[in-house]
Image 1 (cartoon, rainbow, N blue to C red):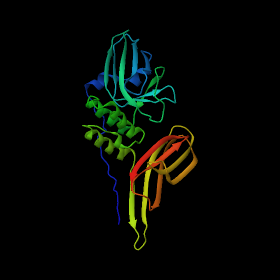
Image 2 (cartoon, rainbow, N blue to C red; image 1 turned 90 degrees about the vertical axis):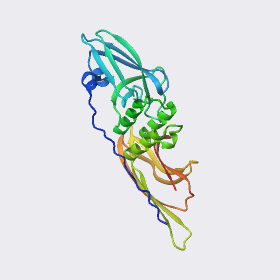
Image 3 (cartoon, one colour; image 1 turned 30 degrees about the vertical axis):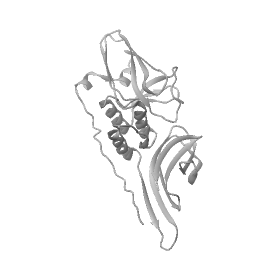
Image 4 (cartoon, rainbow, N blue to C red; image 1 turned 45 degrees about the vertical axis):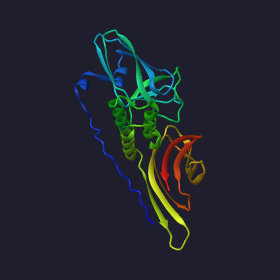
Length: 281
């Protein structure tokens, strides 16, 4: 028996969509670098929904027009706390000398980090990866009307390689389909061949693939295959040192008489999960 799982890709139009407001409004990170705008971003405590407060003061003699885009990252000042992905667009106009505060709506973009507490602060960060921006714009277009836990799961599917099975609930088919397509772009899939040898009571399953992994710091890494119970069935790397940065990791192995079920390719450092890819045999 020969079974091949073919990878597919979904293409999205990521071209800039200019309109009139883009010519009038400036992005948050652009204005934060100017001395004309006072800016502070604080946490409410928690990592989803209206969990961040933006404090602004216009020091300029001119009005300031600010757009906070879906897909903008707010970078935590604490390297152990989670960054926040904005999923609700905000348009602000500040008169000269005006001060204003505004609650921003978003979700954690780093599942392995600690949830921000009320003392946490943020910086205006860059736009997220293009696939994550597509998701953020989709959530904004739907009014962020899905349950918050569902939207958080969708974000983690792209930022932390979680499985789309976490996107649950009624009316989430469109969201799950979008995220699954985006995962095929962001996280390359795997190929599988299952071969029953003639006259031999063995089922050999050859699994291969290529994944992209980002290490935020230099670290010692374990890469392995395990089942739902955490039992390790194949180990590729044990305490292998990697420098900070993005890496493409290729793997290929043959499983002999493994039980049918769900398995996980996991990348871990210091007991923390950096990447996970689910597959079934």
